[in-house]
Image (cartoon, rainbow over all chains, first blue to last red; front, side):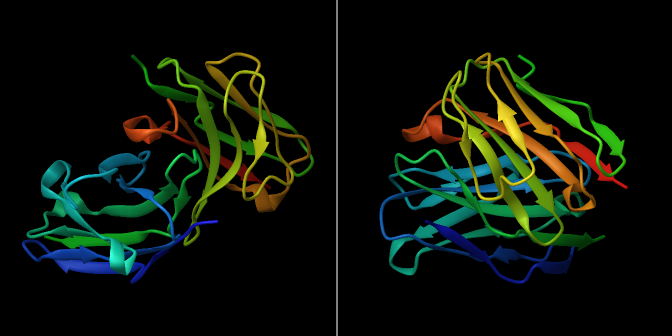
Length: 113
Length: 115
């Protein structure tokens, strides 16, 4: 079964700082990769996803993620955060052809104005 | 399209009471899921369904039952609620397992407190 690790559960940043959230997974086969965001009091929304092709994926709101197969990683980045990026971010993985998603424990990001 | 909807949004139960959470989707998705979200634990899969009339256990199924009598609805039942079931419950659905069909769409959540 696949598992997902997210580090640095709590991240506090000032506006305009750069953000990078790590995501590592354990599964040897072909995977689909996702980053979801949950704003305070809201449900999960998809930020970006990787299925195949260019390993650098661009998502909504200026976020991007890079799939590095050799490192089993799918790190999320944003060059300059805003106060409105305060949210919890979840990395999720599933094996190709498998409907079940494995989620990481999330990163709580707080951006200080 | 409403997407994925959940009812109720909030509920408080006493230990031992029962209740049913309803999830509905209007996207004609085959797959539906129930997750629970607890602080520092991420989302954990309770049960899921790969089509009308089917259900399967996820990671944390104990104390819950589900039914998928209609393709658009997925019900989560608690027969005898326990304080450990205090959580936020999310329903999700997706179209299939290949390519972009794999993206799961989430409902707004149900916040359940068991006293």
